[in-house]
Amino acid sequence: MPELPEVETIRLGLVEHVLGRTVEDVVVHSGRAVRKLADIATLVDLVAGGTVREIARRGKFLWLVLDDAPDALVLHLGMSGQLLFHTSPPPELPRHTAVSLRLDRGLLLFVDQRTFGYVHPSPLLPTDDGLPAGAGTSRPELPALAAHIARDPLDPHLDVPAVVARMGRTSSAVKRVLLDQRFVSGIGNIYADETLWHARIHPATPANLLPPDARERIVRTAAEVMGAAVLAGGTSFDALYVNAMGESGYFARELRAYGRTGTPCARCATPLVREVIGGRSTHRCPRCQISATGAQWIGSDP
DNA sequence: CCCGGATCCTGCTGGC
DNA sequence: TGCCAGCAGGATCCGG
Image 1 (cartoon, rainbow, N blue to C red):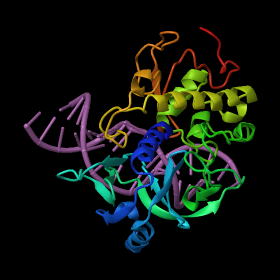
Image 2 (image 1 turned 120 degrees about the horizontal axis):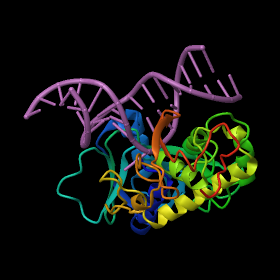
Image 3 (image 1 turned 45 degrees about the horizontal axis):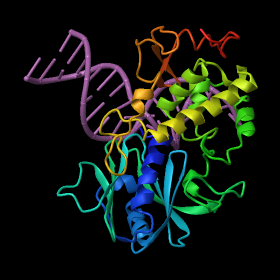
Image 4 (image 1 turned 135 degrees about the vertical axis):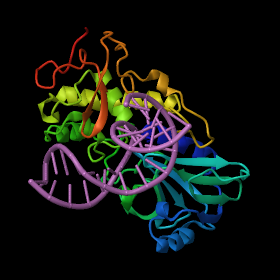
């Protein structure tokens, strides 16, 4: 559920309240987030008594660096994960609390309704390019669990020409390519639809049929949309996405495509349509985001 | 290798 | 009111 802007909003909250804190105790309430029972011991060994030195992110992956531990603590939120900080313990833990970290000041809860998220130690490995791994870290080190994903559109070290070239070598629908974290990371279903609406490109267009300037525009548009979403604190539809302090973001009011089936396009007033592309619900304007097979994908002012 | 679909899980909504 | 199909912000695995 949370995409880059939501994960970044959570990260910023953690930087404020968890960075520099020492973990006094770890409790695993439900095994699935930690996968195997043996991993609980590994998790406790890594985290208990450690001080949080960095809170880093690439795409939708978050990780904590503790002292000089060789492993990072990776936090992936999946579809429904939350990280909730409390200055003092709540009277009752939220339903679906999977892991809680008691800090020298405060409590950090990992809560996950649909259980696709996880909390897992992962060895820090050198980045391919020798550059800092992502937001919130100066180290050229990435957890092994995140080693297969590309940099994200908000990463100043993203190699845009390389992404544009790679996109030109697949015939998959461009929407599917945006969701594939190996091309560019951090984009999920909401921001894929928003990006393609702003870029005026039909989501079913095979990526290799898009001219290079259109592919580049897509990557830059993704950065603009997600940058704006970070400033708004992310997209909240309900209580499932809130920041580390439990507050909603307000980017939902800026959405132009996602979830707007049947409502007038903000550019041309044509009712938006919904279809399934790449197995995901996809929202688009049938007029501005034109043909998937013609030469007009790039669109022009209606 | 590349592509597309199935699958993991819980909870909510809307139609009958 | 109750039931059930369908859907939900992600990522991985597997067969063709």
